[in-house]
Length: 157
Image 1 (cartoon, rainbow, N blue to C red):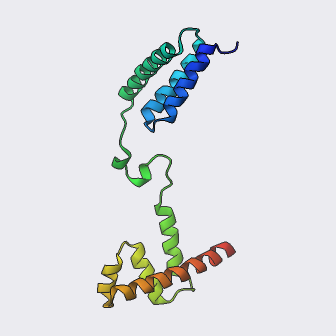
Image 2: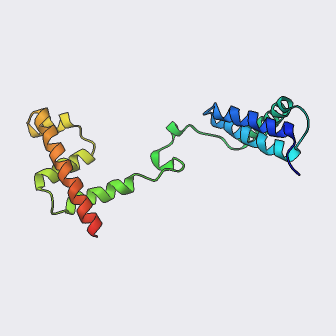
Image 3: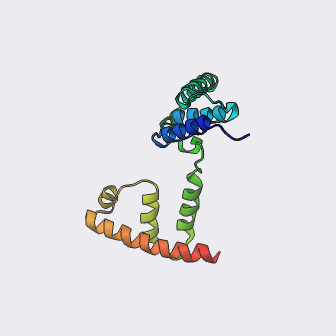
């Protein structure tokens, strides 16, 4: 059975509402409300259908929130974040490559490993007893060489 004109108008109103928000709760409500409008296919006025469907969807989602507690993504560790690959695997692989590649000098290798360990350029300059611009230049050159070497070595493997 085709949708009534009022149901079609209600779906259009809900789509506009979804297009104007980034709030995931509202987007979930709109999605559930659309399902209800399609399921009921009512001939009542579109604004009434929207209000009613949004209210029902909100009640369902509030119940879901009571059952399943939510957490802010900022409270999660990177490896617990949903949909995100654990970054430590790539870091471990890159550090292993840095330790074993013949393409870098010992000085470049040490510099890049210290950078991978989280040392900032100013700390590296102080540790090496050279100026900050000089250490930045060394970092830039070592990264450029490492990028080229990594691409050729990993692509060849």
